Image 1 (tube, one colour):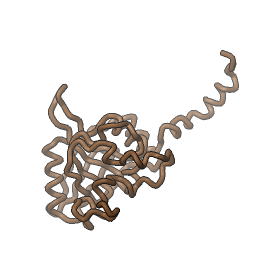
Image 2 (tube, rainbow, N blue to C red):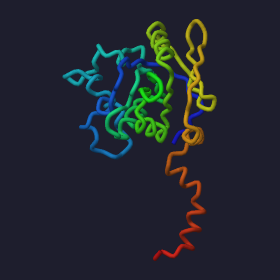
Image 3 (cartoon, rainbow, N blue to C red):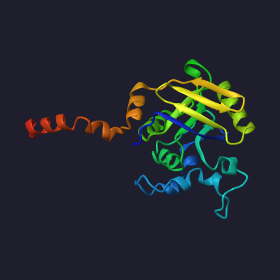
Image 4 (tube, rainbow, N blue to C red):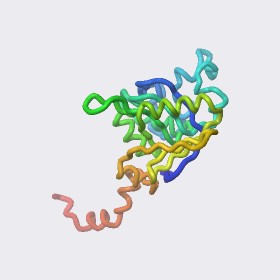
Length: 211
């Protein structure tokens, strides 16, 4: 997995809440378990018209966002089924980070991301940035106001820096320390396990297989 420390890129908006994994990658594209070829099918039903051409009325397709690598969206992104294909599709479409807001507090809080989707992102090198609704609304307004708006995701520092024409604005976000360490080191679950390959081999050599 490609390590993630800092990434700077163009921010694209997806101004919808409760975007589920079937909207991210529809079920007809789940025929393969190979982690390739899903990018063009991300957001398929919104992205293309009935003739299979790019839908010019969907803001994500606007030329100003063609080189996007950061997405800003609304709360509860990635809800629905647990399909990891959704994360594969977003990563293969060029995204390195997604920004979404939490809503409410305590037991009534709606998270920025569905839990399984969030964990799948961490396992595939895609960073999830969760901020308050007011902070995300501010980012949306800046994205709409400035063509080619860029932001930097600083994972070690747990900061999002929006590079607006009027100056930089910095937002802080929480991130699971274990996932953070693996992302910075570029380790997926298998690669993390292989860090202990010598110890595993020693155990296998000395272990009574009948036990």
